[in-house]
Image (cartoon, rainbow, N blue to C red; front, side, top):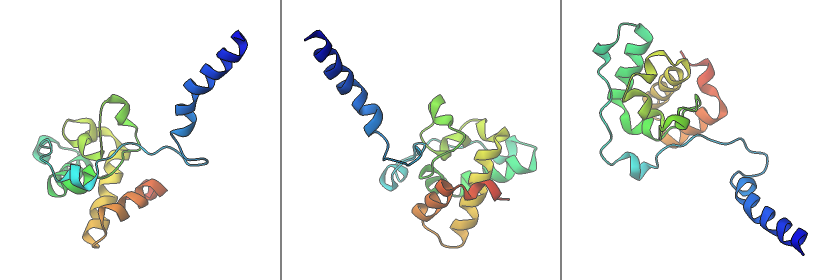
Length: 134
Protein backbone atom coordinates (compact mmCIF):
# COMPACT_ATOMS: atom_id res chain seq x y z
CA UNK A 1 0.00 0.00 0.00
CA UNK A 2 2.81 2.44 0.86
CA UNK A 3 4.41 1.74 -2.51
CA UNK A 4 1.09 2.47 -4.27
CA UNK A 5 0.64 5.77 -2.44
CA UNK A 6 4.24 6.74 -3.23
CA UNK A 7 3.75 6.01 -6.95
CA UNK A 8 0.49 7.96 -7.08
CA UNK A 9 1.99 10.99 -5.30
CA UNK A 10 5.11 10.86 -7.45
CA UNK A 11 2.93 10.83 -10.58
CA UNK A 12 0.80 13.73 -9.38
CA UNK A 13 3.83 15.83 -8.46
CA UNK A 14 5.61 15.09 -11.72
CA UNK A 15 2.58 15.77 -13.91
CA UNK A 16 3.05 19.58 -14.12
CA UNK A 17 6.65 19.10 -15.21
CA UNK A 18 5.66 16.98 -18.17
CA UNK A 19 2.43 18.75 -19.08
CA UNK A 20 3.96 22.25 -19.05
CA UNK A 21 5.44 21.83 -22.52
CA UNK A 22 3.77 20.40 -25.62
CA UNK A 23 5.34 17.17 -26.73
CA UNK A 24 8.41 17.73 -28.91
CA UNK A 25 8.38 21.52 -28.58
CA UNK A 26 11.18 23.50 -27.02
CA UNK A 27 10.18 25.93 -24.27
CA UNK A 28 9.66 29.57 -25.23
CA UNK A 29 10.85 32.32 -22.88
CA UNK A 30 8.14 34.60 -21.49
CA UNK A 31 6.71 37.59 -23.33
CA UNK A 32 3.76 39.92 -22.80
CA UNK A 33 0.43 39.58 -24.55
CA UNK A 34 -0.68 42.41 -26.81
CA UNK A 35 -3.02 43.70 -24.09
CA UNK A 36 -0.27 43.59 -21.44
CA UNK A 37 2.16 45.36 -23.78
CA UNK A 38 -0.31 48.23 -24.26
CA UNK A 39 -0.27 48.99 -20.54
CA UNK A 40 2.36 51.45 -19.32
CA UNK A 41 5.79 49.86 -19.62
CA UNK A 42 8.90 50.77 -17.65
CA UNK A 43 11.03 53.36 -19.44
CA UNK A 44 14.02 52.06 -21.36
CA UNK A 45 17.50 53.52 -20.99
CA UNK A 46 18.40 56.41 -23.25
CA UNK A 47 20.54 55.41 -26.26
CA UNK A 48 22.81 58.34 -25.35
CA UNK A 49 23.90 56.41 -22.24
CA UNK A 50 25.92 54.08 -24.46
CA UNK A 51 28.90 54.38 -26.79
CA UNK A 52 28.97 51.02 -28.56
CA UNK A 53 27.20 51.50 -31.92
CA UNK A 54 25.26 48.22 -31.65
CA UNK A 55 24.06 49.07 -28.15
CA UNK A 56 23.06 52.59 -29.21
CA UNK A 57 21.08 51.14 -32.12
CA UNK A 58 19.38 48.51 -29.95
CA UNK A 59 18.40 51.02 -27.26
CA UNK A 60 17.09 53.39 -29.94
CA UNK A 61 14.88 50.58 -31.24
CA UNK A 62 13.66 49.91 -27.70
CA UNK A 63 12.65 53.57 -27.38
CA UNK A 64 10.87 53.52 -30.76
CA UNK A 65 8.94 50.24 -30.56
CA UNK A 66 8.61 49.27 -26.88
CA UNK A 67 5.25 47.50 -27.26
CA UNK A 68 6.63 45.35 -30.08
CA UNK A 69 9.66 44.32 -28.00
CA UNK A 70 7.43 43.65 -24.98
CA UNK A 71 5.61 41.01 -27.05
CA UNK A 72 8.84 39.13 -27.81
CA UNK A 73 10.59 36.37 -25.88
CA UNK A 74 14.28 36.73 -25.17
CA UNK A 75 16.39 33.69 -25.95
CA UNK A 76 19.28 34.69 -23.72
CA UNK A 77 16.91 33.39 -21.02
CA UNK A 78 17.22 36.53 -18.90
CA UNK A 79 13.73 35.61 -17.69
CA UNK A 80 15.59 33.48 -15.16
CA UNK A 81 16.73 36.79 -13.70
CA UNK A 82 13.22 38.26 -13.63
CA UNK A 83 12.72 39.65 -17.14
CA UNK A 84 9.23 39.24 -18.63
CA UNK A 85 10.03 40.04 -22.27
CA UNK A 86 12.68 41.40 -24.62
CA UNK A 87 11.64 44.93 -23.60
CA UNK A 88 12.97 44.35 -20.07
CA UNK A 89 16.49 43.89 -21.46
CA UNK A 90 16.50 47.61 -22.31
CA UNK A 91 15.06 48.94 -19.06
CA UNK A 92 18.47 48.40 -17.49
CA UNK A 93 21.88 47.84 -19.03
CA UNK A 94 21.49 44.13 -19.79
CA UNK A 95 21.00 44.78 -23.51
CA UNK A 96 24.23 46.74 -23.74
CA UNK A 97 26.43 43.65 -23.91
CA UNK A 98 24.02 40.87 -24.87
CA UNK A 99 24.38 39.89 -28.50
CA UNK A 100 21.17 37.84 -28.43
CA UNK A 101 19.08 40.73 -27.09
CA UNK A 102 20.53 43.09 -29.66
CA UNK A 103 20.00 40.73 -32.60
CA UNK A 104 16.41 40.10 -31.54
CA UNK A 105 15.82 43.87 -31.39
CA UNK A 106 17.43 44.34 -34.83
CA UNK A 107 15.19 41.63 -36.31
CA UNK A 108 12.10 43.07 -34.63
CA UNK A 109 12.89 46.53 -35.99
CA UNK A 110 13.48 45.26 -39.53
CA UNK A 111 10.28 43.22 -39.57
CA UNK A 112 8.25 46.01 -37.93
CA UNK A 113 9.40 48.39 -40.68
CA UNK A 114 8.22 45.77 -43.22
CA UNK A 115 4.75 45.96 -41.66
CA UNK A 116 4.91 42.62 -39.85
CA UNK A 117 2.84 42.13 -36.72
CA UNK A 118 4.29 41.43 -33.28
CA UNK A 119 3.02 37.85 -33.65
CA UNK A 120 4.86 37.47 -36.98
CA UNK A 121 8.03 38.82 -35.37
CA UNK A 122 7.63 36.46 -32.42
CA UNK A 123 7.29 33.48 -34.78
CA UNK A 124 10.53 34.52 -36.52
CA UNK A 125 12.32 34.90 -33.19
CA UNK A 126 11.06 31.51 -32.05
CA UNK A 127 12.40 29.98 -35.29
CA UNK A 128 15.80 31.47 -34.48
CA UNK A 129 15.86 34.01 -37.33
CA UNK A 130 17.42 36.52 -34.91
CA UNK A 131 20.73 34.59 -35.06
CA UNK A 132 21.44 36.10 -38.49
CA UNK A 133 20.09 39.58 -37.81
CA UNK A 134 22.29 42.59 -38.40
